[in-house]
Length: 384
Ligand SMILES: *Cc1c(COP(=O)(O)O)cnc(C)c1O
Image 1 (cartoon, rainbow, N blue to C red):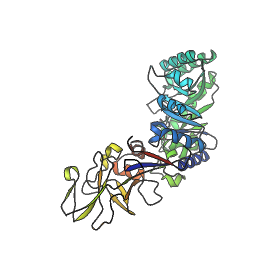
Image 2: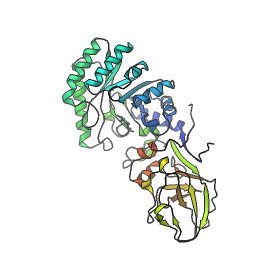
Image 3: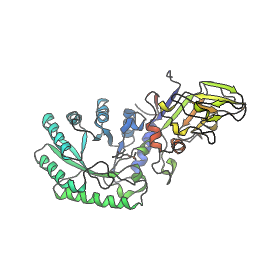
């Protein structure tokens, strides 16, 4: 038990099982588990290992530092990284046997320089902006980029192993942009092959497309949020509808329980005032720990949901930096040290990260990735 009376319990067996569900849903494709952002807040290295145990053969790391941290911990599998600026440690990435994305000539030049210095052949995934309007080469610039890369491939400096892209509306599988992006993607693949690339993997699908759109699976799928058991498409279905189980449980011990009279203001600004004599309970987690301040109770509605003693309550008043308050109700029998669950799998009636997302007007991705660095991650159910 850590000195901090709260923790994020991470169920690695559930994570591995989620990955095998995803692998079964995409039988023709390999699985890249995306473990960026500290494994979506669940812990980078344990999440990566559990994903490999569940059948992933690739890992996705947005930043080079994340990819290097995986290798430094001895994590195997193929690793792809894609978000870096000029001057990035690309030589270290190649030394660590990491695949790199390329979307612009400057990036290709830096990768080739790193290949010369290290004597390593860089494995390149050329990223195409098929319509998201974010990363990737535009189709207009693609031909030159591919020709430059294939010229370097002829010199033995690199191998163009992948063409990849990312969808704007994957959470709405019938959205016309999905088909339009797939058509641009197919053109990019055809162009690369016409120019002489021998591609190992074409990849386009995030979690939403992995779960809902088999036509987007190609050779490799790149689920992130679904690996952690949350639904990327809450309007279409929750985790259970896809056979997924949420991996993280955020829980804390009550640090203070006390009786207060009716009319007692609660937390900053007294947004909540007790309507009757009652019992307040204090939870030692606040916005510094990732509890969204937008999930404060405003006096008319409760804030983010919390399970205590088998009942579901809502945050009373404002979420503070380190704490939130619950109105446990008149005659409540909880005591300091009793457990409160902010979110979990939902299988024991506790709220879920999706419930918190709804309370805060955001998405479950933000709820789990924002769990603060000072909240201990306790990994259970798997080999670390
Ligand atoms: C984050 C990310 C993913 C995973 O997205 P999810 O919606 O979490 O499945 C896949 N591909 C790229 C390029 C990403 O940045």
